[in-house]
Image 1 (cartoon, rainbow, N blue to C red):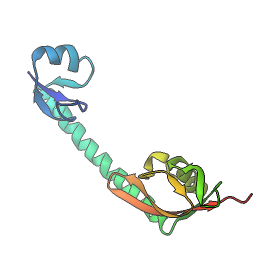
Image 2 (image 1 turned 180 degrees about the horizontal axis):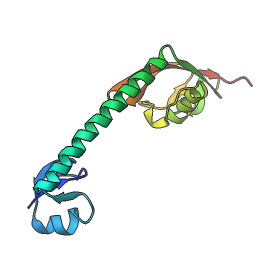
Image 3 (image 1 turned 90 degrees about the horizontal axis):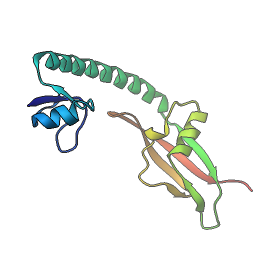
Image 4 (image 1 turned 60 degrees about the vertical axis):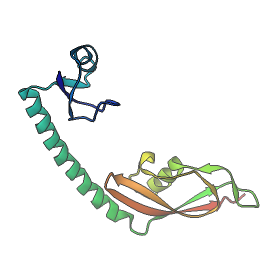
Amino acid sequence: MDVILTARVDQLGDAGDIVSVTRGYARNFLIPRGQAMAANDTHRRIMDEEARLSGLRSKKLKLVAEAHASTFADVSCTISVQANEEEQLYGSVAEREIASALQELGHEVDHRMVRLEDPIKQLGVYTVPIRLHEDVEVSVKVWVVKAEA
């Protein structure tokens, strides 16, 4: 039986893919969970229209993200933390702290947009990428300084 996947299914495919599965798997598992629909002409047209609208939405969001990215020119933020004499932090600076510092500067940033490979554990200046859209990424300077006692 051919079905159109409405969501990503591991080891089967991505949303919008037309795959062939057994009738029981489709009827008893995929369709009741909303992960697939029968691959008839009506459903194919619906999926084509949804793909077109999704593409338009994605283009609009990318334009908004590019406009937002222009506000990040030469942006840097300072985060004060407790540290010892060897410049090792007591704890670390993670995505949430960076997003919070950027929000205090007036930039609308969610912590999931901040792309740190590892949490920051030493004092210094770091260049941190911020992903505003899947195709739009900007870099900001983060100054991690020792808090005054």
